[in-house]
Length: 618
Ligand code: K7E
Ligand code: CUA
Image (cartoon, rainbow, N blue to C red; front, side, top):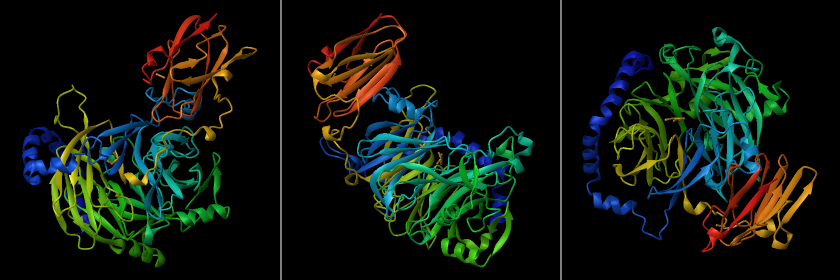
């Protein structure tokens, strides 16, 4: 069947009607689905045993799940689905003092929210290496979490020119780059231009963020000026396709207003294929124009950097197979997922087998580069992989997961999910050698399948055992809002530290002896060097004058696992947590006169309650 005929069948009004119907019917359908799921597992007790991690035992996998507009990353154990920890990234989190001390406050800047979508574990030779986790957010930012201590170490951005960073943070196979891309095109350089000029004056941006191989430090390396489409998702090529990045896009109509109507007119949208090594070289050769301080490549001036692959209308996910040979694009208004062949893409580029162009970017011919249209079901969104060419595609409209095979394109199995599914995550699923053990469906709409907690229903995930031919739904878990993508890594690849070693603490205000704790004053500046150790915060009181600038530098001199101490200063909105061996500072103005207690917020010993003091402002 040609793409054109699909377009006729799955034209927008019809699909929207199906979509609305599917969503509205989900709640009443839930009990039946439950029974079907129970039947498919054949033996509930056996399933329960598979996911049961006994007290004292550890899960074999970590799952890092995006927290969407909570701005956090949530870490779960797989298969128990136990929530292990929350990593605050783009938003303050008093539980760990994140966003309250000087360093993290500065890192967050003016933005105290972020919409985090796609976590990306660092890779070496296409395998997760357990060093860092990157995650994007919509305000043009990308963050790095260090997996030695599970803490956010850097937030890059908001970067210039690029706007609404959704197609991010997908890393390349040796973590050379993380990616960023515009979802909401706007004038580049940024300036006030009316939406009537959208098609010509607004631009999209695809950006490469260079990652230092030793420190993980991110720097914005280059940007590519793109037509004003909405760039949606991405994935890096690997093995045979290493050196390329792929981005799906919608609204290639360049429309504005009600996009659900105006941006579903055309028969096709595109996946942009970017030769990032060529981009790197063009920049090194001085071919970039500096716009708002960033080197930007204009494909109208520099050829051979980017090509457009026609794909089913309004694609969402684009996913590269573990061997790098196939690029799977899911048109969410279709009943098929399209598989492109990397070799054919290269041949088409070599032969200049182009259909036309968009703003001087060559458009490849669909028939020349596609290998198959796999009839997975309605509303395909994202694809994950297992070993032996197995692929798993989430179907939003069908509320199901389809399992199919690369190469034969045969659909092998389909499991109904109890909620409308969005992303899905397979164990080691984005690597060159996926495990094929567990698959988690991350769901968009819960549809009342839980104890009611009022109108805002819990977000949900479902765990599937994918070790056999038929997928088995084995567990439901309610997850923190709002999950988008997640990645699952073998637990033994991550080697977290237990304490910050004393000898590695190079903080200039660190004090390791209670004798060195105390208060010094310089003009209107008051510096308090504080030591936290069971069960005293020394000094136990300090003074300032109204209007003074006060810096409290706290060193937790413990070297014992889990001996955290907190510093909560009442009425001053100050809440620090200092881990063993760590020094943190907080700087504030003594605006309120009077007596204010501070105390340790983390239960640390039998005398934790005694760990307190007074701040006096005269
Ligand atoms: Cu929720 Cu990747 Cu932002 Cu798809 S995205 S479902
Ligand atoms: Cu220190 Cu409680």
